[in-house]
Image 1 (cartoon, rainbow, N blue to C red):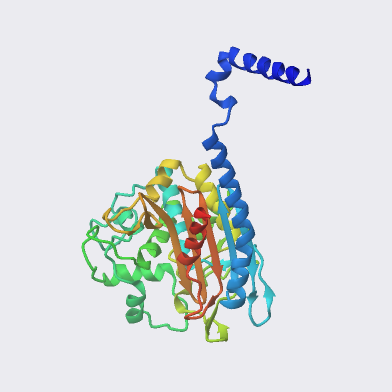
Image 2 (image 1 turned 180 degrees about the horizontal axis):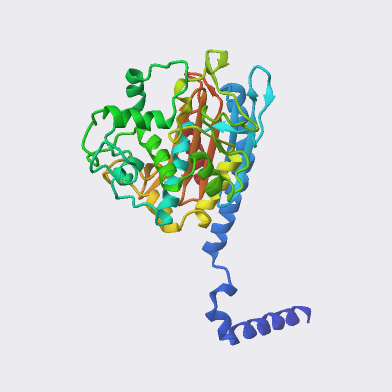
Length: 384
C-alpha cells in the first residue's frame, strides 16, 4: 500500500511538471548536466588552487629565497595573497600586502593608461605626430601610437645621457631628457613605424606629453585620474626631483649568492614614465579589476590597448603599454619590471579572467623567480 502511494505521488508530480509547457520553454528552470559539471569542476579547481598555492610560495620563500608579495586571482576572486620576507633586509621590517614596491617597467602600463585617458577625453589623437603636442620635438612622422607601441625608432636616453649629462652626482629629470633630444637631435635607429624596438625613451616622452596636454605634473595627473578614483592607497609617482614620502616603502636589494645589499641610487632615478611608480599588490589588483568593469577606460579602448601593434605572426608582441604573449588564438597581456633591486610581474589572462601579481625587492642572479614557470603551474591545474 505504501509503495503504491509513492508511485502515485511520483506520477502526479510528473504529470504536473509536463503539463506546464512554460516550464519547459524556460531553460533557466533546469540545469543541464554539462553545466552542472562545469560549475562543479570550476569550483573544485578554485578550491584546489587555493589550498595548494600557499605551499608553493612557502617553498619559493624557503628553497628559492623569494622575498616579496604575491596576489593571484581568478574571475574576481582572490585565490592567494601572501607577503614573504622583509621590506628591508637589514632592519627586517616585515612585508605586508600594503607594502609599496618600485614597479620598474610595470610603470609603463600606467603611463600608457594616462595617455589613453587623454585619448578618451578627446584631448589627444594617437595617430597624430608627437611634435603637434610637444613643441620642439625633433622628429617628423613619429606619432603618439609609435611611442606607446615602441615603434618610434628613437635611441636610448641613457646612451644620450652618458655622453651629454656631465653632473653624475645629480639626478636627471624628464625635462633634461627632452632638452637633450631637442638640442642634439640624436639619430633614430629606423623610420617610425617600421618595426618594434622596446625602448624606455618612448615612455619618458609620453610622461612629458601628459604634462604638456593636461597642464599638470605627471604625478598629480596620475593621482587625480587613476590612483584616487581607484582607491590605490599606496600608489604614487616617485621622482628624486620632488622626493615625495613613500608610505609603506620597500627597499630594493641586489645580491650574489647569499649576500645582499641595498641597491644604490642612480642619477636617472629622477626620470619617470618608463619607471618611477610605487604601488602595492593590492593597488595593482584594484587597477586590474577596474579594467574589467570599465570604471577607468571604456571597454573598446581597453581592447585597443590589448591588441598587437606589430606583425600578427609575432609570438611576443606589444600593444599600447602592454606586452602580449600569444596563447592559442588569443594573447596574454603582461609586463615585467627590473630596476635597482626590484623585479616585478603583472600578468592578465583576459579569457580566463586570471591575474598574477608578483613584486620582489631582491635581485639575485640565478635565484630570481621565473614568472612564466609560475603561470604555467597555475595553468597546469586545469587538467587536475
